[in-house]
Amino acid sequence: MTEPCRVHVIDDDGPVRESTACLLQAMDFDVREWKSATAFLAEATLKQGDVVLVDYRLDDMTGLEMLDRLAGRGPLPAVVLMSGHYTAPAEMTNGVQFLAKPFDLDVLLGAIAAARRGRD
Image 1: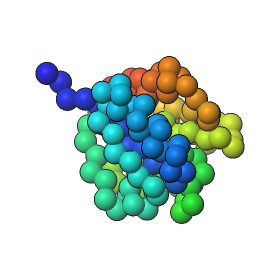
Image 2: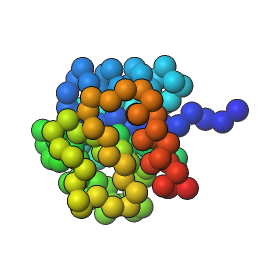
Image 3: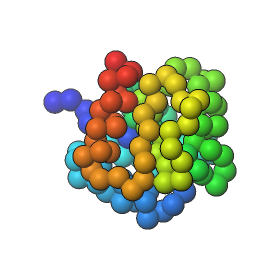
């Protein structure tokens, strides 16, 4: 039996973070919730195959700033950058997927699958 994919949901909006985590858990993902990029960077343990689902606009830094700091530690995991305020930033590279809020489950699952394919 294979281990479920771990998804790190990083969003400072509690209801959005919690509902996204609940949807993913119902689809058998192993979910870790983070209310800030700072907490994620300080405490998260990433393993191969993990997906980082991060909001573009966080209280402590932008999602892109967090990804820059994460990239300084080694190869980026599969990443989905989500936003309710912006369209896909031009500076996005490395196969980072973009997800506009609000999104439905099928769109979320598609973005996660595309991000994972980009890392295989």
